Image (cartoon, rainbow, N blue to C red; front, top):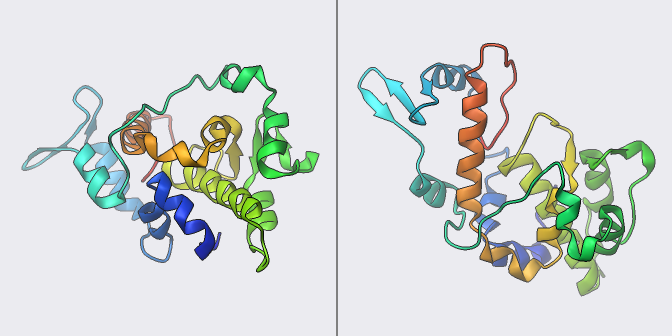
Amino acid sequence: MPLHDRIIPYLETAGLYHLARLNSQWFWVDEPLLSAFIERWRLETHTFHMPFGECSITLQDVAYQLGLPIDGKPVSGCLTEFENLMEQGRPAWVWFRELFGELPPQNKVKQMTVCYTWFHERFRVLPADATNETVRIYARAYIMMLLSSQRFADKNANRVHLRWLPYLASLDDLGRYSWGSAALAWLYRCLCRGTNKNVVNLAGPL
């Protein structure tokens, strides 16, 4: 999705602007190299066992290379019961409508996820005369896509999960979270899963 100038201040406040600039025009995933690293990953120590010794991806790497904040409140929540985390027990789709102004069509919804294509088609072009509230809605959509596709990608490669709604409800508070710590923990989890011989796909902030 295009990075509109008017939503950049919201990304800067959230500590996600540098990450937003690391798009597909800058980096590509070298899959053979990644597979070689996975073969050397050890679950017990969270390190790569190389011919010259051990090495790993650290929190400092996340902070310097991705520009993500590593201090602040933890990013947490139970995915299976995340609706219980909603403000005042509010149903997820009611909150979705309030935050994005509308609901996606039923053919773009599966359980608690929404197709990427709906976000892309609906929020790709920011109107030139957009009000401040409209800009905030587009900023939420961009951050929702950013978190789901780059930072916390899973094997639902074409869907956005609603678990990010509690964070997007207050854009001004996004910068208070330790996104770097959460991204590193998610990467470790995905690398550990990738070592299973039965796993053929790898997710995470690769």
